[in-house]
Image (tube, rainbow, N blue to C red; front, top):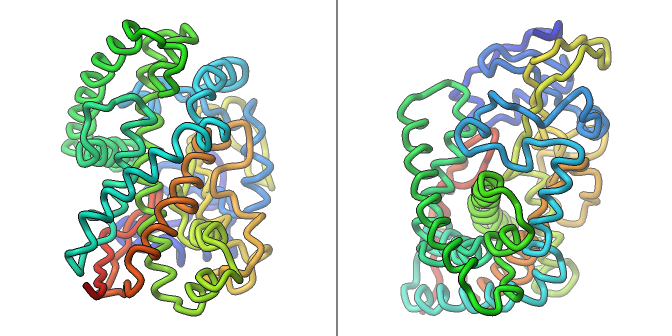
Length: 391
């Protein structure tokens, strides 16, 4: 175990709102061992930015980690050449060119279909009724699991996310995660049959097809599809609903976007800095090393707290305030090292070029209709966002 200062948290309070405790850590013990999580947390932006790249010390390779045990060893849990090889195999499905030329149009069709259904209702929950089916439909297409419904995609993704954040060891949470991965594997079986038997397979750009075409080992292919699902459903869903909520809570910001003085991308970037959909990334200590006076031992567990980096007072004045005109460049929303999010281009396109502009254009009188509770620290987002509009 590292010799970092001990910092106690209340797990329920941390899940309800991690930011007060993270602020105290940044001020009092920026590298702190939290016994309730069984890990040492790095909370300052510069520390995370530097140490994330030192994969020889803070390794993503975690054979006994929750994600590896529950989902298989995906490329996010590999370093160096092994990571890069699998990233290259998956890249054709997620490259900026593929996103703009292949997926963006499908995103718009799916989003329009959801809004066509919603518009006559006059009220909805933006999480369950809009963001979830929009992100789910996009992910079904990108992964190649086209037999899965958006609701099924959301359910299996949530179960995996809950499993990967289950540091308390809840057996029921683990069982739901195993059931979800079994369902995903059954859908991958069918997608592989289509990919391997499809005439003109060279043109298929989904995750199953491009990895199969690259000759990736099936175990790695399956694990990487699960990785894409774990990061490609909940986070865009929460970012769509959360950014819409933030704009509705801050009418001046919404007016600035609608008036062309700010962009949907600015609204999203500031939301993701302020309330990080991905709050942390785990690492395994590979060798003895000392950082800022704290000595780490092999096999220590370290959490890089991206959500804390986004509120670091050294970079962000009034960090607890949503301000779409601030410079969000120092934030680490998608990471900063060799494990920078492979799906960043797809997420940005879906949230800022499709879901947000189409939502506010189609429902011009949109307004909040009740409170929007948030939850989570490793992954954080609104549980519901009730809204209404004139019909």
